[in-house]
Amino acid sequence: MERPLVNSTIIGLIALVFVVPLAMVISMACMSFGGSGPNGFSTEGYSEILSTLRLRELLVITTRALLVAATATCVAFLVSWSLFRVGSERFLLFFLTLMTLPFLANEAVRVFAWQHVLSEDGVFNALLSRVAGGDVRLFNATNNLNVLVVMVLNCIPFGVFISTASLKTVPAIYWKVSNDLNLSSTSMFLKIALPLSKVALYASFVVTFFIAFSLSSEVNFLGGASKISLRNLVLSLMSASKFQSIFALGALMTLLIVLFILAFRRVRSSQLLSMS
Image 1 (cartoon, helix red, strand yellow):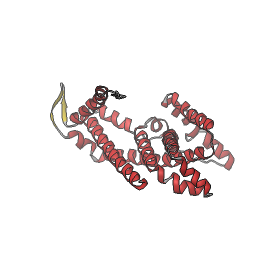
Image 2 (cartoon, helix red, strand yellow):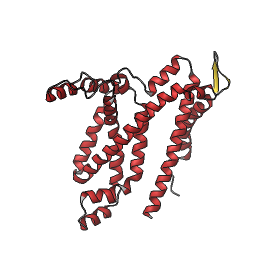
Image 3 (tube, one colour):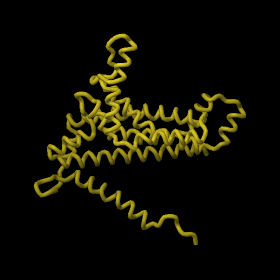
Image 4 (tube, one colour):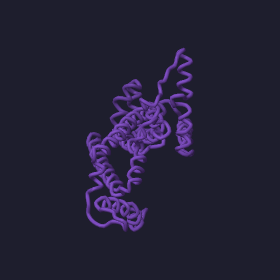
């Protein structure tokens, strides 16, 4: 009898490591906290998170994350398609390795470097002003364009890895038939690559969304007077000793992740049905 690759006990222990903290977050979100810890059922945490002030902050964070995720996913897929069509295996490996190098540095260090390039008085605005012959401030503290640009650049590599892996799994017969029919690269992109990459595009969007949702250093270094980010929201709740609200926020984010997973299963099922 062939032995399983992974023992069920090991899987159970791994699941326990993730389930226990998650269960604690959900349960703590419904408890009030006194001087000695949790002391009863309460919904004050959800009331705080769903208040007008907190909802306004979450709306800013969520809208920014959606914009970053959509942009990063589109750009990443175009990059992956270009690499898949014209790049050799060696160049592809070199490019993917090169993309990971910046992540070896601390996030704050990377964003601090971007601050000197994309801040209101940074290198880019200075060069743009010299070329235009006047004072040009494309990036400034009022439009937060620099924050969005840096977030997108930080999220693109994740989308590239997902999209590239997806394109690599497309059966070679599709590309062979396309070449035999003399289809253009645009036709192959629209009729083969996009339809067969729906799951990868969705996965790329979800991953980059949650990454962008939690990014905070970009806001702190480049956001000007506005410092609305998930980290700063949690810190403000901690400073006010509203620990129940932090757990409530975690529970709501868990619910959002579950909804994304259910949607992913639906997208996956629909793609499998369309291919069958």
